Picture 1 (cartoon, rainbow, N blue to C red):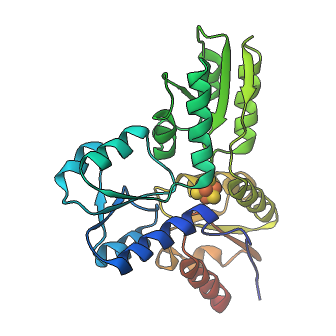
Picture 2 (picture 1 turned 90 degrees about the vertical axis):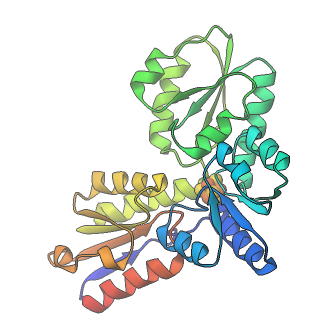
Length: 282
Ligand code: SF4
């Protein structure tokens, strides 16, 4: 019998669970229900919500094309302009922005108003980062590579650094280190979410000891992608799957110890299905 280890931190974090629960609560109340973007990066959940009549608003320009109803803002949060446009179009807002993300919004809003250059360590294409940028009173710099950190310059004296909540901690430290040598007045808010850090550390620990690793989560989920990256560093035999249907048991046959982890947007039933199937097979 093989050793199968399931990460304790696998699956929904507090913010995502809260957001998903809020959508299901609104469904019970009835009426037109929308989410601003897919509520989470998980196809199964999004399909279930769609079957229950929840529609997705695709962006700022798309708001006016929908009948008034209730719009749930997902845990990633949105820029200030979105609240204004939703109100203008007569939408009721249910704000499921994770409190940890709201905290970043208020930091960048205050600090940019004080005249500091905001630097976001994160991926400029990620909706959470776009939301954060939308709370800065002056344009923020977004940095996710050493090259960009070396190239960074501003005419402001002080910079205030924040991070995308799901950014990898070691990489954050590395990029901050480069910025610290540039001679600005530096202020740093490490806004990496603890849930992410715990999940990443546990993934690394399990992967170190494993002969094969399964990382469960949507293909578009950035935090799942990061878990996959970390796991590959410790265990090249790592497989990223969306659910049990994508699991090829043949590939696990040679492994004595199998680790399983999952991104923040992976529902518990999907994790349990994978875990039980692996257990049953071996
Ligand atoms: S990862 Fe952290 S910050 Fe992001 S939604 Fe979950 S609890 Fe909130």
